[in-house]
Image (cartoon, rainbow, N blue to C red; front, side):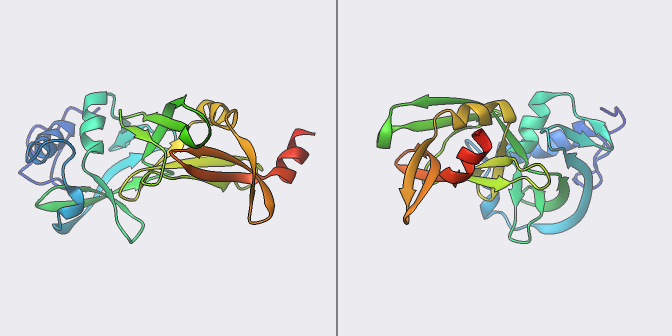
Length: 209
């Protein structure tokens, strides 16, 4: 990470390096316990920051990977995706845009407990969120263009999702079952009483042949 940002001038967009950003966001995070209430903050938009979250979950600032996980975790607490489809870092006094290639988080681990309607799938993200898939945190499955594969996503909070990492996806589908939905046999997974269709069972059978 660049070492040239000691002085931020009190602004996210004027912050010269990660330490300046870290100080600003830490002050916002200390405003309350737990995650900062970014959904209740409505600051002015102050422009875009040269920060990007790559598809594998790596954060870049000024083209350089942010190697300090505590710093990435701190930034992640003030992420917000708005109705315009863009993702921002938000504090009580300003909002700056960042780039997200796919999803802002990656689900890197899962645990499955219980069975049937009592089954619960719990995921851990690359920044340390622990989320139980269910009514408040649904799973969705998207066809991957050009490959015929699937990309599962888990809603973490607000509009922010985690892409389920491929090794975790393989573990996830091992817990799948065929369930009839609206007269069609679907390959699905369950968690916290919810059923999440992955694909028609007929398609799975063709792929497995």
